[in-house]
Image (cartoon, rainbow, N blue to C red; front, side, top):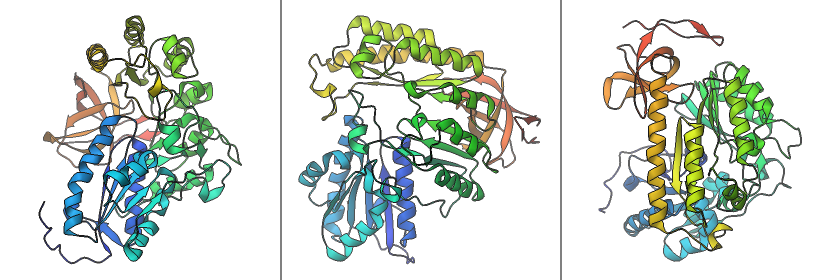
Amino acid sequence: MTAPETAPAQTGRGGYSVLTWGCQMNEDDSAQMALMLEGDGYFPAASVEEASVILLNTCSVRAKPERKVYSKLGELRELKALNPNLVIGVCGCMAQKEAPEIRRRAPYVDLVVGTGQIDRIPALVERVRSERVKIIATELPSRKDRGDKATPLRVIGGLAPKLKTFVSISYGCDKFCAFCIVPITRGKERSRPADEIVLEVERLASLGTREVTLLGQTVNSYGKFLDDPCTFAHLLERLNAIEGIERIRYTSPYPKDFHQDVIDAIAHLPKVCEQVHMPVQVGDDNLLKRMGRGYTLDQYKDIVGRLRSAVPDVGLTTDIMLGFPGETHEEFENTMRFMAETRYDSAFMFAYSPREGTKAAVLEDQIPEEVKLDRLHQLIALQNEITLSRNASQVGSIYEVLVERRSPKDASKWTGLNRQGKTINFPARRDLLGQLVRVKAVKSHLWGFTGEMLPARSERGLELMMVED
């Protein structure tokens, strides 16, 4: 690396850069970090090399993101040597789990901030800069805490309105699945008060947001331990009534807490999208029990059956993990059979990765990497066939599409998601950004559809615009 050139003069306290690994919750946390820093007088740096503050928001679900963080820290070491006033911070799940190791391997890191202390970042950065100290802040809130101590203060909106926005409605997890590090890195499950969430979404709508995605580790268990009880289904009802918001999504619901009132909400609330991402993890009851998932395949299949009966055009996706300790060939075949029978629209598929501190990490009969990868490749091939088949069967269907941007591969086309969460690219010459349009799927792909524009009509209480080229 070379020393950064002098940046153009700007008002504020310097530039910042936030680098993110991991899930949508981490993306939302990073957006909050950025907004908080901007509120404290910082501005987005044109590049990492020009930043005065660099925050790495990290993931610990699997080993690969952690390796990438240490690799990036190695690159940043030279920047720190060139600019001792540079503030480098490691935040998020990896910071929560490995604060001492981060300090040992990268002693030049100034700030290690766990998941429960994100809203303190501006104050912690200021302390690093003014007192020249190194700080570790990893205390997790308890369910006994109330108000701001239980769930972080959130900055609503930003300088640039967003068409689509994440909104965290709960934090932490109580499930303690044998393979999962999340309860350790994010603490006990805590829900935000419903009134606070509604106010945030109302504010976002006033700033131009048209779609929100509600986030929680087990999002449909929302409402537990609140002083003013509110179920997830009732929260969906309240958000559905907000003017300006036209689409509501959420991730990820937990099968054990997927009750009929949520299915009814998907079926009857016009703004709740017909998309459900419900992780099953494996298709074998013995494995589910050893994982501590808390449900059986029959219970899961019952949810899927009721969901598809109430919402026939639902887009159903899942998470699948192969190679859990002790997984036999027969258990793997049961998962393959379950996937073939359930026929998901798509799936996130990955090999089990031991996480220190979890029950599964110390189990005997760890599966060799080559076996895990072979099984994973077989599953990916099967699911790709299913996805192609399901998409091909939907050619000719007419979808509501929220237009998000020009297609990155063809500027003559626009792209967006249908309500089921599938990508549709279609040609049009007018500026359609942010519009709801009707598109007919004319060709299917593994990633979604190519489509053509149709005239408008009113659906689900929404007026879809007609676009004339």
